[in-house]
Image (cartoon, rainbow, N blue to C red; front, side):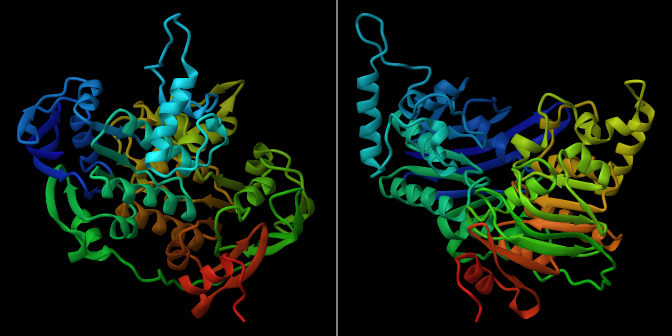
Amino acid sequence: MILDMHGIYKAFGANEVLKDVHFSLKGGEICALLGENGAGKSTLMNILGGVLPADAGEIDIDGKPVTFHNPAESLGAGIGFIHQELNLINDLAVYENMFIGRELKRKNGLLDADRMIRETQAVFDRMNLDLNPRSMVRDLDASYKQIVEISRALMMNASLIIMDEPTSSLTGPEIERVFDMMRMLRDQGVGIVFISHKLKEVMQICDRYFILRDGRLVAEGNVADVNTDDLARFMVGHDIRTMKLQRRHDTAHEVLRVDHLTDSSSFRDISFSVRAGEVLGVTGLLGDGRSELFQAIIGAGSEYTGQVFFEGQPVKVHSTTQAVELGIGYLPRNRKENGIIKDMNILENGSIVTWPRIARFGFINRKLQNQVFDTQVKSLQIKLERKTDLITSLSGGNQQKVVLAKWLATQPRLLILDNPTQGVDVGAKEEIYDIILNLADSGVAVLVLSSEAQEIIRVCDRALVMYHGALQGEVTGEAMNEHDIMRLATGASLN
């Protein structure tokens, strides 16, 4: 398949989202579509996927103009769209998900499970996948769920697959598994559009790139001719800082100390402390137990043995409500599943944690609610149209800022940030890093949980590295580099 989109224009009222954009792709290549949140990437791909009509411009496939009025027509032309939020049903088997909405039936009207299993297995065989069609989707890790989505697109004869942030929720080994699948598809002549904010991954997997900024195409070319700094500069229009964010600070009193924390399965014999004004990183690989450890500390995880001290006093937190009352905030790792409430508006999402504090006789003080949130909007530079719009109307970076806002409104003394820049663009990352450092400068103790070694190095004063539920070591100063962090994260020592 050869795709050529040219002169694409799209506006929503007075808001021009795409302005004379062109984009091309041929079978057997992986092409990165890049840009900050709100640059127009999703709108362009929604036009290609038949979700939205273009106001002007043309789409040509193999030299012939086409128009898609709905996603079914786009899929019928050989274009598969794998959205960032996977469309799988956990309580169904893999083969049932592969055929959902187009189930095969026998002559008597009953489902032909045997035939669906055979056809699913045929697709898996084509891709050399060791995956049982009868497996339940809920038992698969995130990478295999992505692969099932890819397989479903191939079963529908897709020659071009759009992958929107396919690695945003994956660990390192899971990402490699998906990349292996993408390379195999490329070798088989399938074209792939790769939408991502992870520029290192673009350099690793993509052949060409297109970059949008403010609805216009600002750069395109071969990935081999650029580096990550070039791509970041094209995306935001100026150079991006890449050095460690140095700052002068004097850590004051100890805010949190844990001694010999152990649970039944996820972590064991964990001891560390963090002081006011300090940014402490916690990193590792798949299964390191860091999320489970801190969920237990704030009363949202498993029971543990050992002792937690907060502000010098022994505590046993039994609920997140108690954690908030103590002065502990926790931003969870998966924003879409655990950070936002999709059916609520921006204001409600940004203030929900403070409702007990601003309510009287069961009624929320709306004036105070708005005042507190407006302060956070200004402080965090949250870009929004109306506070009453749904939270899902915002870009990923601004959604993450709203999640931050609700915790900052509680004025925490300890803030735990689990994967704080997941699914946000390079510009929004820099803004979040500045927010973290400003919090520390104001005396808040900040814990940053992240699998990205570069993120840990850039923003943290020191870092703990976990391996299979245990603390493998601590890095600081010159030892705070990707090589030493990876050695510890894989079970080695620095000696």
